[in-house]
Each structure stands twice: as C-alpha cells, then as structure tokens.
Image 1 (tube, rainbow over the protein chains, first blue to last red):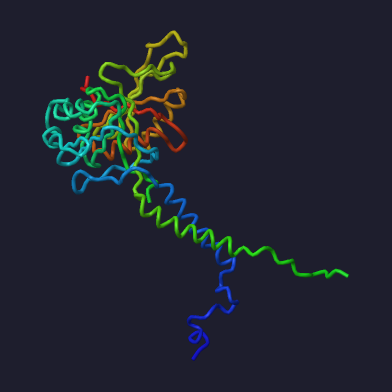
Image 2 (cartoon, rainbow over the protein chains, first blue to last red):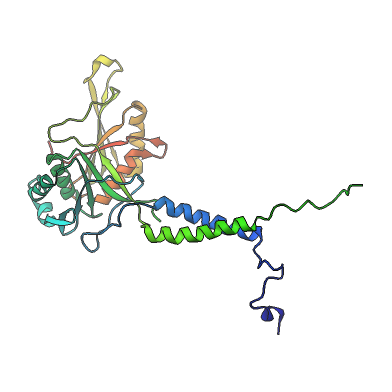
Length: 154
Length: 163
C-alpha cells in the first residue's frame, strides 16, 4: 500500500496543524472577502420582488440607486396592477386612444401620496407605459420612478 | 559573536486570527445569502412635473432646448442652439437636427452638445409608441453617461399628449 493510501485521514506531512499554515489560509480569506463584498453590494433590505404575472421581467439598467418607497404600479403583459391588485387590462389600454388610464387614475387617487414607483415588464410598449406615467402625473404624484434590475446584480 | 546569516526570529502565530476570520466569513456568507436577493433593483428617477406644475428653468446656456426622438431609422436629436453667446439674446436660436443610427452614435452627438453647453443637465426623450421599456431604459442610461463622462443626467420622458 502506498504512503498516500495509508494516510487517508492522517494529518499533513507538514505537522500536526493539518496544513493550516498562514500561507494556506490567506487565499481562503481573500476569496471569502471577495464573496462577502460581492454579496453585500447586492444586499438589500427590500422584500423580495414578487412578479404580478408569470414571465414578468424587469429591464436592466446601469443605475444602482435603490428605488424609493411609494405606491407601486406594475405594468405587465396582461394587466395593470396597483400594489399587487389588478386595476385594468394592459392590452385594452395599450390599444386605446385615450391617454388617461381611468382605471388606474381612480386607484391612484384612492391611495394618495407623492411617490409612485413603476415596474414595467421589459417588453411593455411605450404606448402603454407612457400612459401610465401620464396618469400618475395627473393623479398628483410628483415623484415618479421607473424600476429596473441593476447590472450590479450577481 | 553574531551570526551573519542567522534565521529571522519567529513572528507571532497568525493561524488563530486567520481561522477566526474564516469562521466569521463562513457564518456571514450563508446568512447573507439566505436573507438577500441576488437581483438588485434600481430606481430611475424621472423628471416630471405634476399636472399644474412646470419644471424649473435650466441654467441659461448655449443650448436652450434638447430632445431626442425615437424614429424608425434611429435617434433624431433636435436642439435649439443660440446664435450668439450674448445673454440677452435668449430665444434667438438656430434649430439643429442630427440623426444617430445607434446609441453609440447618439452619445457622440450628445457629447458635442454637452461641449457647447457643459452646464446643461436636462434632456427630453420622446420614445415611439412601440418602443419597449428595456430599450427606453438603455436609452436613458446612454444619455446620462457617455464614454467620455457625464452627459445629461436629468432625463424627462415625454409622456403626455403629443403637440
């Protein structure tokens, strides 16, 4: 039997410390530090994102500032949602000639506030997102943000 | 008599300290991975006035109005540039139109206007009706920061009725 076979669970030949020399530990500390920094860069106290519809994907951006807190409007492929509650049909309002989305306008006026956060599906057409933006303006929301996934994500 | 090539005295044993750091990391990493989402969300503020408000005026400069329209052939930059640098000649402008075929070309055009008016920060984007949201976001990123530095960080999306 070879020496390596006999010493399956034995210590390293270097001594009784199991090979944990500073030279061996330093790269491990480096790797863990890099991992920790990478995780901390993407760490957020926000609750996890719950898509209102299956297949809902946010666009990507170079921005890194976290989104503000406010009334959330989701613009999906099928529907428009305010705080997770369906407020209207996306297809109907995308094709409609009206600029003001009345379903959304009423829901937004009931909520009140000054900040609105729009989470639009990446393929939602501007003909719909623009109307949502305009409706939020008309409902009295002065601060409007568009939410996207930061490219700093892991 | 001192030895010329004597061994350096053994330093303090670093292993306990390093093992403590590794142990701390091994505890912290799973904890963070369990409590965080690896998808970081970002908020892009849109400069939009309320129904009865107007945007505050820009610092007077050589470029009085700057907007980019999405067209089938590319990005059309429309700018109103003052004919002279005299402050009292506000409104005496020359309309300029430049078509950029892609975002890189658009950034080059906007760099030129930024060079004309370095203090200007505002730009208006006019997407087409069928422009998808991810393209609007990429467009906004491109007009904010170019390869040679900041361009126009305050982006206004034209969302109201078209004039």
